[in-house]
Image 1 (tube, each protein chain N blue to C red):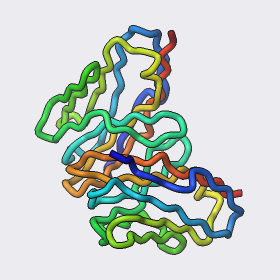
Image 2 (cartoon, each protein chain N blue to C red; image 1 turned 45 degrees about the vertical axis):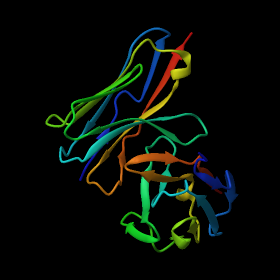
Image 3 (cartoon, each protein chain N blue to C red; image 1 turned 120 degrees about the vertical axis):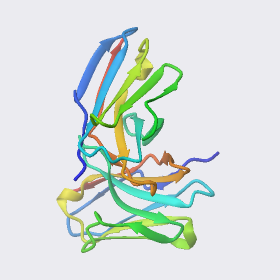
Image 4 (cartoon, chains in turn purple, yellow; image 1 turned 45 degrees about the horizontal axis):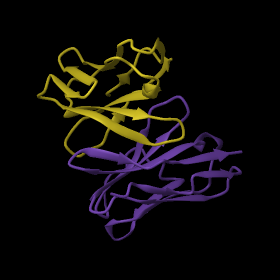
Amino acid sequence: EAGVAQSPRYKIIEKRQSVAFWCNPISGHATLYWYQQILGQGPKLLIQFQNNGVVDDSQLPKDRFSAERLKGVDSTLKIQPAKLEDSAVYLCASSLELTYFFGQGTRLTVV
Amino acid sequence: KQEVTQIPAALSVPEGENLVLNCSFTDSAIYNLQWFRQDPGKGLTSLLLIQSSQREQTSGRLNASLDKSSGRSTLYIAASQPGDSATYLCAVAPDSWGKLQFGAGTQVVVTP
């Protein structure tokens, strides 16, 4: 069974630039999550999709972050414009019956 | 507001010793609690899931207990090995929708 795929693995951008992350969940998993993990902290949920509908985006900074899930499969997370405090690992996960599968994450550095 | 705390933040033990990792949460109204392992530069791997109605869950050398009333969970790893070196995170789900709230993790080093 293929795992959750994320790209890119690493990204370095200057503040005020934009960036996009891509995630392909495990086939058949209806639920997809984006988490932000700042160094030394646990992951924090940014947005949760059920198929292509948003279940929870209460902690997503909507003035700069946006996310979509195309046809209930792949998802992209965008930041525009980026701030220094957005430096973190962005983790995508999908779940089936509450069993989570995480991708390897995208490490974003904003300079 | 739910808060999840893991103490200590880091732990070093010699190989063969049993590991005891602690997790506490402030709101006992949880749906389930999960333990994950995170290796450097990698995503999280699910280890154990305990439903709110359960007291413990076991998988191989791993055993997790849950005491909802006191807001505590403990992960036991028997006869630790160097391959157990990783960061261990606990997370609670407030409902059946799947959203998780994580602690900051305990970084474990098992020395040969």
